[in-house]
Image 1 (tube, rainbow, N blue to C red):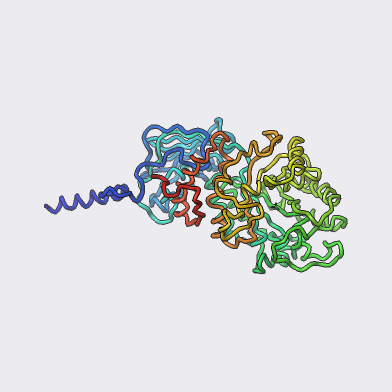
Image 2: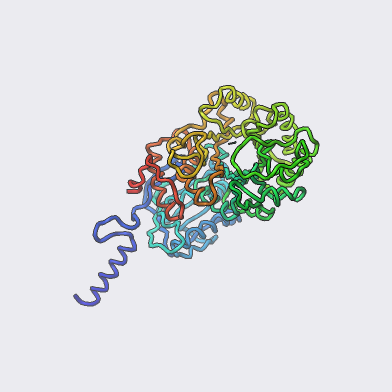
Length: 529
Ligand code: ACM
């Protein structure tokens, strides 16, 4: 064999390897055929495959129109693609072809988009930047999972040809993180935000106060954070967000098109506040800090005026930090507050939220008082919740209270999957992956008008969860299913098909370093084959 032939052979082999093609016919490291357009979670509204794929190459540019918002999303996309592709991917306002992000009038709504892919390029079109951002998440899922890595990968970076048109079923697609039972740092919250954004979640509800810890600085009542935030379940050091920390979370969430919904839980779940200020207690005696996991033993003193000074100050300062529309006032498990006091308290506190320009959200026990006009109630009942309690929620919905659905035996991400799950609780039962996905928010509470359901939210309570690894094991693989219930039309819900799309996500989680529960209900090993 003459040398230059040998060189050509080697080059040819390298090329084939680079394309993910194996000489021996064994499974390639990375499939060279692109991910089908319908392999996305949440399922898009409509998918029309066809035509040639687009291939991102060293020469690809990301084109934007002149708007600052489109450019910001384009920079996010470029920053995401550069490490694994190793390409420059300049963002430019000139030229054609490549990846294009366009803002244009169209039937997309505030969060929808269209993705057109073909040999010449991929174009995302949306009416607003949130739509472009969600379209970018779809594009991300259409690329090989190795795109998630932070070192250069071989590619090829193919996007299947065709068109996706997509917009959400519900405007509220939330996830809640309990930062009170265990405190999570700003970086841990950001990590979760990035995982939520991948599935088009648009609300981050932060449970900022509870018996075990007060987690947000309040200038007018400084001991709430410095003392009330000084421990957590199990007696660890706890922590709290300074106002700068909280603003950073809000900013980061907004950069991923999530709105932060802060919660101060009242009048129960308030031991950390009561421990911080003796005057807030009816008997004037501050209880000790609490590091256990019981609920229902604490209450603000409904009959004392100082309670309302406290509430006004806290809501004023929190509202000033929060650009979003909503402020959650809790209201659950107020077992140490009489019904009469509960109603009185909510009648006084809801107008304070309105005074500072926010809309009330409360756990569904709020429907046992008089929800303010425009208030939203977050339903966290179970199949076994009493008919009377459900009827109260249904009646409130019929009278105009919007509902966020978080049924605990479906979407509480801290529930164990099975009896063998090492983390989590089981008071609402075991919640395997199918159970968390296979229900219809639109028909969940019979008698609720369709328009009253504003969406779904997956709470993550942290009695047993101490770090990101714990959060991720409980969120994955259930979180993408809740995201799909919030985004995709009810008609597309099909467990048999969904579980295949879900299995295909595992490679992405592996690339992202997300440890997940390998549910036997999901055909992991068939994914993508
Ligand atoms: C709740 O789970 N207590 C809202």
